[in-house]
Image 1 (tube, rainbow, N blue to C red):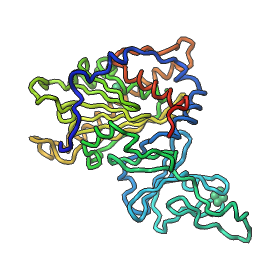
Image 2 (tube, helix red, strand yellow; image 1 turned 60 degrees about the horizontal axis):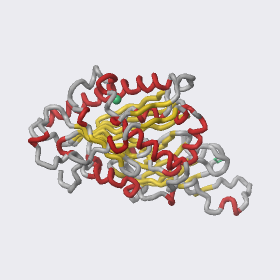
Image 3 (cartoon, protein in one colour; image 1 turned 90 degrees about the horizontal axis):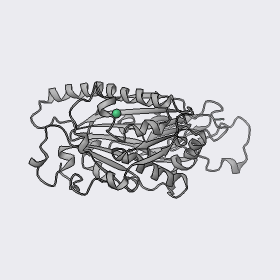
Image 4 (cartoon, protein in one colour; image 1 turned 90 degrees about the vertical axis):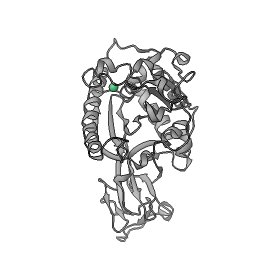
Length: 379
Ligand code: FES
Ligand SMILES: [Fe+2]
């Protein structure tokens, strides 16, 4: 890997002891008012992954994206950039489009009364039909803009629009980490999506620790990882853990150890994306709330296009196809467990979660979330 990096495996880099065990009250997951607070104070201020950028390759392509009660259009412009806007007709609130597509004429038309929008969400045409609107109501009329950027081969949006902090500043250290892989050039081999009957944070928590692996993934992930040697680092908002792989003699590696070259690295980009990254392969998962008791999980499986040294290209392609099947099996196990936790959401017996040191990223996560919900972290 060509770019300079800060090795993060070694003495003094593990924060498990520093953060220590923690607790999260059950109401954080079960209280619908909490979800309302997240809708109000968290989601309008953060960057969210939409999809791989390759889903809108051509000028005129537009993507309809709907999560957590929001409906957004992301459109490829003639200059190759993206624009995003709320998919809400500014006449009387119908969705402007009801599916993704391509517009040769660069025009999206609301089917209720025929307002036409350009691919930046500006009203470009109001059907005359002999009736007048108040000029003040229709001057510079446009669907509210959503900030959009492309990074690591993904489309990201931020509802804060022009008040959003630049994505790369938002991602900070974890952005530096992920930059080194060049994931934007990797090939997407597949993915999947699940609707899960559990709070979105319950599902997300399941990916922030590896301590469940020997029990929850006993059939699929036996061996391969040295979980008891995991090292954790929590940044201002995001976090990571580094897991040594079985069969690698850490003492024989050049010191300090290049964790991206030799180890399994796992990142959280706040608030809802998990990056599970090997030197030549990655799985990315986003968890979006539907309401306080249901969520939607989407995952992508990607690999470097060129086979690792010593691996024939044909074999590499085959192994990546197999990796998609494996991803589905492992994630299905996580979703089953998450549903089991979702089943107790309203139970009088569900009082709190207790967290150990190996679950310290979860403890840290709720400290960050609290900052947002209390209004401390502004966009
Ligand atoms: S609601 Fe879209 S044109 Fe009337
Ligand atoms: Fe898991």
